[in-house]
Image 1 (tube, one colour):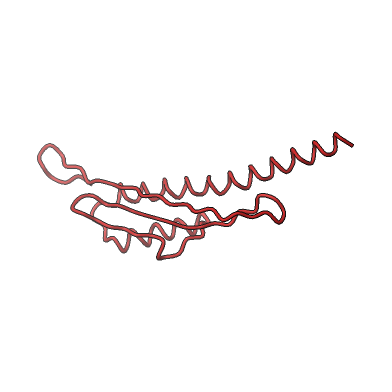
Image 2 (image 1 turned 90 degrees about the vertical axis):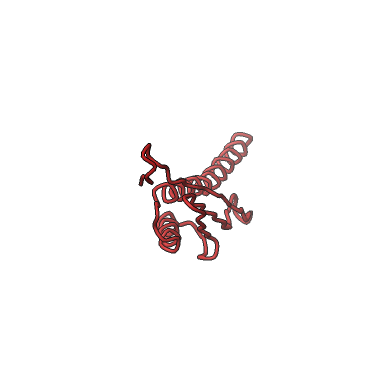
Length: 118
């Protein structure tokens, strides 16, 4: 009987770890994609960059609203801020709402002649 209880506890812990890990894995993939968009966005319009970030979120199944993404540009510096909440069911009838947020930036660099490089 003790073996069965121990086995059930181990299964519950593994299940919770996989569900939580999956949510964080999506977060890190989304953050990395947003970083790439900011770095390689160049002089692309900020609304188009915002659309690209939103499309990537949809592909990764990240539950973010359009208002949860903000893209700003100050000179050659592009900043992407994103915030969203995801409910993760760690155990049956035990869910927790996790808040994910990040801010990434990309900077246009200049070549030795002073021209902006893309």
